[in-house]
Image 1 (cartoon, rainbow, N blue to C red):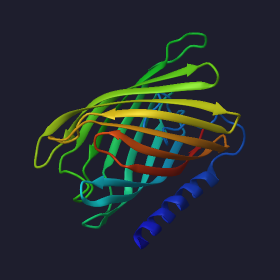
Image 2: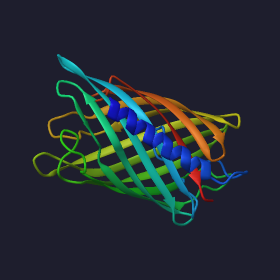
Image 3: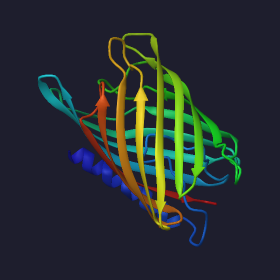
Length: 264
C-alpha cells in the first residue's frame, strides 16, 4: 500500500500544480465526464486542456472465495482541438488488487476522440449529439489485461431539461479482447439524470448496462449516484457510490476525485 500512497500523492500533486496555473477570473463552468459512467456530448473548448482524476475502491464477491478488493487511481486528459472535437487519453496509473493473489500494477491506456456533430438549440427538444470512438491498449500486466487492444464507438446524447435537469444517454458497441485470442462483440448503454442545485452543486443518478465482456459470462446492470461541487468555474470536486443490480460487478464501489481546466 506504500506504492499506492505514493501514486495517490503524485496524482494529487500533479493536479494541484495544474490548478495553480489555471487562469483566474470568470469563465464558463467546467463540464466533466466524471464521476458518472455516462459521457456527455460536450467537448473541451479549443485551446483548453482538462485533467479529470480520482481514486476508486471496490469490493466484489466471488462465490465462496474471499472477496476481491481493488483500489485504483484513474486519470483522463482532455484537449480541445476545435469547437466540436477533442482528443483524450485515459488510464489507470495504479491498480492494487487484494484477493487470493495480491497484485500491484497499472491498468490499460485508452486513446479516444469526441466529436459533437449536432448542437442543441434553445427552445427545441432535440439534444446535442456526438460520438466517442476509442482504442484501449493492453499495457497492463496480468492479471489486469489481455494481449489485444479493445476498440469501439459510443453514441452520445445530452438533453437540457426543465427545472435545471440534464440527461446524458450513451449507447455503444465494441470488440472486447479475449484470452488467449479473438474478440467478442460487447454492447453498452447508460443514462445519467443530473440536477444543478444552486451555483456550485450538482447531483446525478444513473443506470448502466453492459453485455458479457467474456465468453460464458452474463450481462451486467448497475446503478450509481453522486455529487459535484464547483470550487471555482475551473475546478470541481466529486464523489459517487456504485452497486451492481444484476450480473457480474462490484457489491459496492466508492470513488472521489477532482477535475481542473486550464487554458481557455
